[in-house]
Image (cartoon, rainbow, N blue to C red):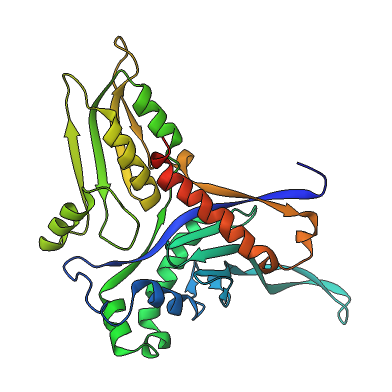
Length: 309
């Protein structure tokens, strides 16, 4: 890296309004989940986070036809010493301090990118708090400002953040293993999430018909092993969707069977931005449209790389 550049990692999540079990897509005739979620983000949702902390979000700013920029962080009440010039002494005082991470959201992909910032909560914690803060709007005056159709859709939905996972290492093990004896997919309730595999539609219809809140599919062949090609394609969808998958594999004929997981911390997907040194002093938003492309390209690489193989 040149002296004139630095890097910033933004971790990727799906921020979605998922239908609650048994309530399907009620309300989504007049308004879409994507548009409703942007309207909810525009209220700058916040949430108490412990006795002396509050999770806060800034106003959102549109940076493209589907892209938005905002900040998310925590304000804390700290007790410390300060010098009282009148008393000529050091005294204890409470001070509010705040810190934030840069966030970019693409409403069409339902893709959220959160800066990994030292000294602040992890991106995953911030994503979870953001989803909880949006849910909390149901208990605030912000809910009253929604239209009847928006209220119906929101009340029949639950806001969730789903971590996006890199698939490269997981798929490499699948391809190179001597035998795959078992493969398990963890499925979530449907939302517009670009899940292309044909297994998605019938399984989610079953979940809706039975009012399930989640489920999983396990396939196995302990004798001859499973053929990996379809499993590789599935893994791309699962990683991009923010769901989960695991497999039991043998690396070689004499090896013991072991379990591998796609949805683990080490596989958390991130986009790395190259920033000009002046980013210490200029507005992040000035570059955010370019950063949005880096982030969406990274997501599409995870989701669509099976088409290139």
